[in-house]
Image (cartoon, rainbow, N blue to C red; front, side):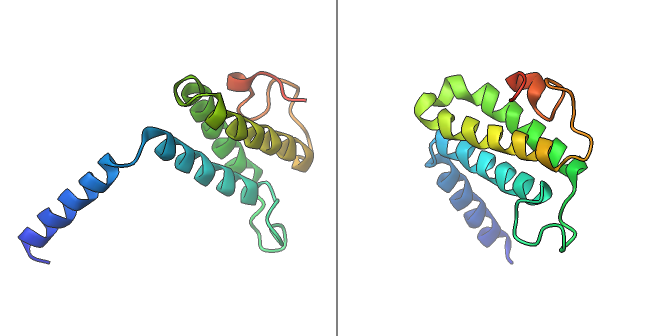
Length: 118
């Protein structure tokens, strides 16, 4: 690519990002984390058979999701945050169920941000 094309593409990308509301960026990031965590927790079809079950990776993803959702919730409003919190809670419970040695309540992934999940 020539230099002018790169500059034009970069300007277009910045303009496109500038037009996206923050709530959509936060929600998209949360959905990506949720999807990856679900696969790593074994919730995807044939996850175990395909070697996708990885609770160590799932813990990292769920903790990152919990931090994002907890920090963003006051900013994006309850209408947008509620489904993210529900999805996070479902993943935390799925992690606990998939774990051969479940963490103590309050010590599971993301629970330092959300509090104990039951």
